[in-house]
Length: 482
Image 1 (tube, rainbow, N blue to C red):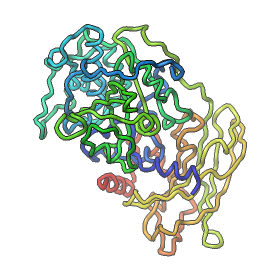
Image 2 (spheres, rainbow, N blue to C red):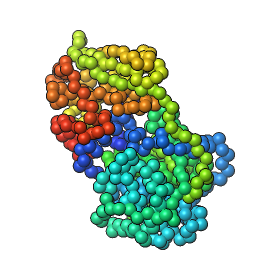
Image 3 (tube, rainbow, N blue to C red):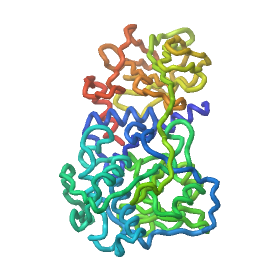
Image 4 (cartoon, rainbow, N blue to C red):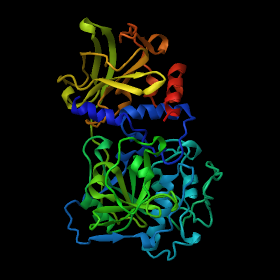
């Protein structure tokens, strides 16, 4: 198996990046399921975080760090418990981060008091319910950008004004209530400190030294990718690795980063799962190397005043844009098949197909965990702006794929190595007659119709156009089995 194939197969195991994954596992909204399945193929959902429109802090990787230990825990509010709701972004950014920032800046002095704690529930209620970066329904997730934007524009109420009390079992929360805000408790600005290569292209600032530099100034908030060991961790020891079996809705989580210790070679993160039966009374140590290489995929900082954080724009100047489509998929000699596909250069610069992977994925209807990458990067052709090229690739159905109903998906540049301007046309979904899955016999042969139909609604912005009941059922069943 090629290096790229190994990489894409790892990405296929990962749910979406919108932090809809902080709490209990739910899969009731078909449109959300469609998003989730699409993001299994894309890697992370860049659109939800809109990181290109955020500002980044200067990369201080080369800064001299003399402090061997930094901790902001004494200025943090007590570890909270978000209960069964996907509100981890609000807990990390408002309750823990903003509260601690207020204490550091001298606005508050006793974060153990509800009157001196920022309410995560008020922030959740203030988040937009529609439009770009809208929060998910039923308290099932958000991203950092709208959370920081709301705290800048409207502020956030205190926990005494908008309380949240978790009784250790469950509680009913009105997820769609109107927020209160507090004009006297606003943020001034925020910046992206670091992000991993999972965003596409090169990583930025994801080094131990850079993160320690900003931790010296105050706490940070992070987006993390969780595995089974993290989920079960109940120790003050350092977590230095995890497995690749991510726990459904728990796969992506927002947490506060509150310190580091060179003697432990680890960062200190503060969670929102209570103090009873997880971590070291609700916090955990994460090994430096594991943190920057796998655990963390984004780091943010903020200030109560403007003009305090140096920054540079993250807006992409990329002019690259490719579109793919499948022309045919037919049986050929020796038990193999040949897929013919078109790549169109819709950008304004020449692009070589060697610069990005093309993947063709077979997956089983109603059992979407059974996925097989049958093609990776397969050509080296330069395509000029406005031109297209038709290519072909011979592949074999994997021996482990048995008879049954299947779909195919062609993807150009699945992890966005070229910074594609419009990723909606990087995908082409292939089905059988009338949009139904095609049938594969026990000898791994099947017939895709000559008039291939593309299920564009998996890629288009208006996913309400999604109509195919058979695929919908498959997505529901796959999500319900996670």
